[in-house]
Each structure stands twice: as structure tokens, then as C-alpha cells.
Length: 427
Image 1 (cartoon, rainbow, N blue to C red):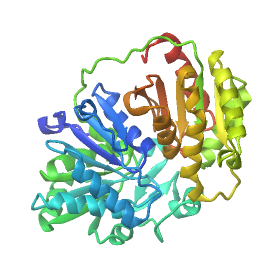
Image 2: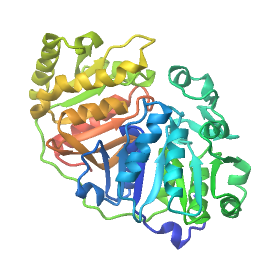
Image 3: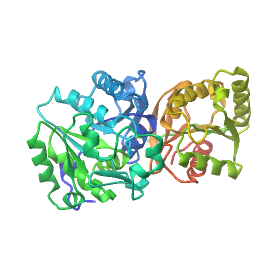
């Protein structure tokens, strides 16, 4: 952390966070929620005035699986529709560059440029707590080049992970800021000079540690009145740490006798391993679901729902996992998540808590259960957010990006949700 933090850096701001999926929106917003700021995550079109009044409002644009043109158009539509007055903007991108971050950022900057002479972007995708760092403008995962990882092989958009090239694909001018420059003591002046040099400039910042991100966040807040922050939850936490603690009221709910529903829809190996570990503990009844069972077979879906409901109603926990092979068709993810949500709708009255891995899975499941937002309360571990569902169902909920966590993540999530739902307290 920087030794000297000015009053301007300490000032509590109202934030609008735009993300391409639900788990990303949540893991950025919880950075502020965990320090006492009121933080709400929404998705779809049904945002309510009460959601928009939150100090920190994160919105899932649901563009992860779209083409670059469609993702840009959706971001532009959301930016046009959502009120941004007096809110600082954080454009959340995936720390491993999945989806269409360049096209989305180009649309965001173009929209902002229509109302300002200059726009300065501070890009820092590093999330050190989950092993994501940036060196020489390139993304690394646990020290390995992103292009060498399973994450890149399974899902990538760009030829390489050099951030200058990634931004250039959408016509954005970016300039690298090396680790030496980040740590050199004059980062604020460097940012200010970059902001003055071009009407639209993005500083591509290296970062290996949380302290690097703290330096970037503070300098970025002073670089330009039109600074836009672009990154993952690592940068969100750095910005939140520069603000004083908030005083939002602690969340409380009635204690529940019903069990926890855990749904694993992510294709990431980390989530599959964690699901196997939770299954091995014997604390959650296991319900594997074949894709063909969700494709229209009403008998199979009814049998799944009946089994899950019986388990939850008896106070036991249920683990539902979509079974996929080692080389899944990425395009089938959204319809599978939607069909699973439809099958589990009838279980809503006996759900005591929910855990979901994968942004599409979480959004589809929660929407199907009548949930339209999440009020965030705490962070169980890096990238794993705990909150309360808002809408026709009010229960504790945990969302986790598929690739985050270790083999025991779902075990820890299950234990925390058991404590919350049985005590009626998020503390």
C-alpha cells in the first residue's frame, strides 16, 4: 500500500461496474461491499430504482459469449440506458481475456468520448490473489504465459495475450507501463502526461502484487477527471481499499431449515475438481445431469427436480452438476444453463441457500428462481462472493467464477452457507 494517500483518493465514490458475466460483476462489487459500502449486482433489463441507488452498482451485460460486434452493441445499449451521472466507471474484463474485452472497451470509450474532450483509461487486468499477473503488457497465470494454459486453449478470442495487440484489434491506442514505471515513484506524473498526449489513451499497467495495483489505483484517480478503470477484481479491491469504510446495515435473514443447492455449470477444470471433492465429503447428495436430459426430456427433468426438492426439504444439501466431456461445445453452455434453471424452478420453496459456479449458470439459475439482483455481504475467498438474493426469493447466495479456487473451494462455500442459513446471519 502506498505510504501517502491524499484526501481525494480517500473520498468515497459512487461506482458503476460493467461486466460481461454475473460472477465477474459480483467479484468486483464485493471489493466495496466487504468494506461496508452498499453493493448490488443486477442483470437483464429489470433493474429497479432501489438497485440504482446503491453506492456501488454492478451490472452484468451478459456479453461473454457474443461476437465482437454484438458485445460492443450490447455494451453501448446498456451505457445509453443506465444512469451514469456522478458515478465513476469501472469496466470489468476477464483476467484471462475471455469474451470480447477490446470491442466492449472500444464501445465504452466511444460512448464516454461523446460527452468529454478527453478520456483516459487505466487498464490493469492482474488479480494476484488468483495467480493472474501482468508483465511487459502480457497476462500470466501462475507465472506461465496465458497462451500456454488450459484456459486459453478452451476459450480465447485473440491471437496472443499481448495487451497492446488485444486493444489494437478494436482500434484502441494503448501504451505499456512497466513494473519499473509502476514502482518508480512518479506514476501519477506519468499518467498525467499520457492523458495529456492523446484525446483517448489507455495505460496498460504491469502488476505482480496487490501493492502494484494500489499504486496504479491511486495514480489513476489523480491522472485525469475522466479516468476510466479497466480490469478484474484485483484492481477493484485496490480502488476500494483507497476509500474509507462505509456504514451500510448488516444483512440479516430468518434462519432456514432447508438445504443448500449447489449448481456447477462451469467447464473449468477447477470447478469440476471442486465438485468431485464436495461429493467425496458426503455432505451433499450428488445429482449429475447429462445434457440430453436437459434438451427436452420432461421425464428426466421432473425426476431431477423431484430428487433435489426432497433432499433440500429434508434439510440436506444437493450438488447438481452438468456432465460434459473433455472437449465440450462452448455454444451449448447458455441453453443448458437455461434448461437446468427451468427444471429447478419448482424447488424454489425449499431452497435454503444457493451456490453457483460460472456466470451464465448463475444468471440463468437465479433468474429462473425469480431473483433479479444480489445484495453483496462478504467475500469468502478471492473471487468468491457471498450475498442475499433480491426478488421473489430471499436466500444467501454464493457466486464463483469457474476457474477460481482450489479443490476445497466448494467445501468451504458449503460450510459457510450452512452457517449463514442456520444462524440467519452473514457475520
